[in-house]
Length: 309
Image (cartoon, rainbow, N blue to C red; front, side, top):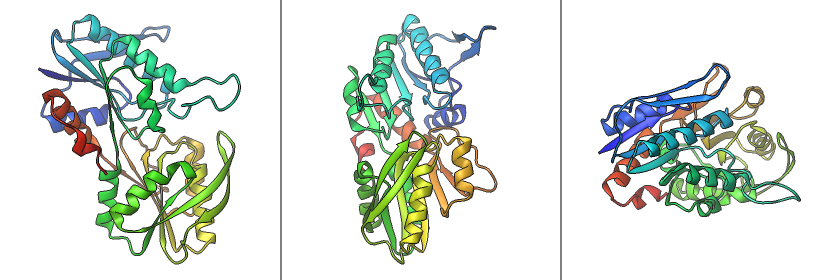
């Protein structure tokens, strides 16, 4: 028997997944002790059951990560037969390598914590780097938001589009979208000055007179998107849109978007997104995609068709 639980990170998405599965959310109380420590109480029998915990580790990342780990521990001690962490947005994913002396590899540390807590499997979506899957000693199912986001772009019937990768590392994602749309491909070469500041350099590819669509995995401060949109308009793009899988955008990012050259930002509900009235953001649900993956995992069926873009 399958049960779906959730922490406090994204209850709306968890409810959407439960609705897709036609299953009620499991009874779990995730609260705080007076000193701020996390308290978890599982309110129903899970002995021998196939359990899924929906909990993206989005901001506040530390709080949501600890909720997930404590829920896994509680369910393991309650004798659940299998515990799958459904983490649509994998926090700390950007720290996936040691790129300077005395730096941590936090993506690996978080993987170790999940496995040590008792997780049996991970279901996630659009990791910042593919090698993060190898950090886990348990099975990992890695989905892509491109089928959901790409369908939206196709339905919009955008005139003369060109997909743009905002950096060299995102070429694979932009290429996948370009194949779906049958469009051209361009790349922005950039240099990052700091965690929240990006200096854009140049564009490789033809964008003049076209509708440029930047594709990226996630954005927090929107520096890459805003600078890229400005450069694309300077190089003759008639319109600039952006499509990102995750949007844990902070207030600095919203301020930048307000004064940017972006016509529209398209994203998913993998993390909660508060949409200000003066910012054009379209949020698409991935509850059906994740729900279908959960059903197939539970039934022991292949999820490979959901991995195809």
